[in-house]
Image (cartoon, rainbow, N blue to C red):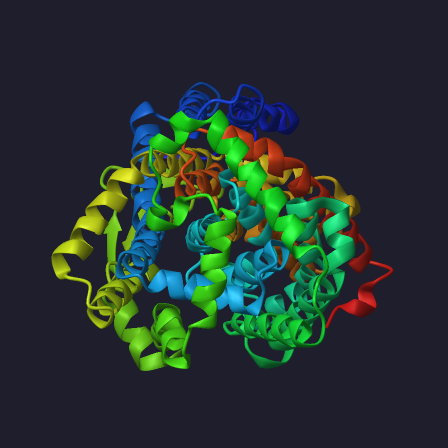
Length: 570
């Protein structure tokens, strides 16, 4: 039996600083020492167990059992989702239909800066709405690679793009989780978040263009970046406040894509060929300087080659030959995913049936043996095995249906399934260790110590509250998990400080969206998808300042919404 202690070292400040050691370890080893993500995760896990045992007095056995539950949760359902999402993509590649999809996007625009907005932001937002948990990063990363982006740039672009949609991802799961834990109506929380993250959505398309082609690219493409950003933001605001939290990102993503198409009908960006040539040159330089990494292989299959001018011409000719039926068939897997997920998440009889198949497993040796500081058994020691309701399982079904429709032989589809598992092996290890770290920190009380310490700042907590969501998502890779960690704490701290509890619970969700791009879990998924396993540290160094900058913007916004901008709230 173990009971959590908020200040095991006598002082809350000292206890919090010691509890931060595992997080400091992962940031230093990954960002400073450039370790591979799985080694950084393992090092941080060892530090977390040491802190749990030496500083918090947690029995070694319970600390290790906490790590095992976290590792299993990391593998299923989280990596299960990523695994099946990438496999579904691979089925489209081996069928040859992916070439039609690539050509279809080329029909919308052959400008790589615009393609970054359409694929990484709009299409990625739609995937985030349906699946979340890394699937958008995996799928859109390989798509950008196939369109000629260098591996590093493709990965960084999709990591930055996977921000604004995250709060409403997986059919609103982060917000629904926060509502369940706090007792606040999740529709009310969603309405608050819908007055925060749209401000990120306004600027993210422009930031993507800056990342792809600098200030010159932004000057040449700002109309489409502005139209998509504004439309996506308005879609998020309207849907979250007046339609449905669950449908918010679906509405926003489709509206943003429509805005891009309409804008490009009446306006054409300048400098498209020059931008494509610059990206092509960067891609060639990357391959010339890292031939060994390319030979290590990637999950991109046929889409991993460099786009030469000849290939660009071939793509243009391919696009010109597309028929309406071929375009429809190219988008079939994703239309199927939308239909299946909408049925599974929004049609109550189906939803209830699927969830009813979940298996609750009291973790052996751990359940009922860990108490919170109030002496109540924590609930996270019961592992939920969603073998059928998991987005990964639904993606697996979609993959087999797609293989059938595309006439991919069952044996070939199964070989691709096995090959994808082999290529994701280091990602499996990384995510398992990171979630093991999160569970050790949560169950030992380290996480709640850090949160309580930050919450002790009183009225200034309104400024700091998004940082908790940012930290939680950075560690776990999931905004849902960040809300599971800190939503109740945000509510309690707000009540003690005389602040609006709903505002700070929403701030936790919004802060989490900008923490996702630096999560070791997401970095590993991105690196694996584009074939640069082992270079997660490079991606971390390229995204950390974007993450901190956007976090600062949110901190200022939440602080102002707590007083002078209170009129913005419902």
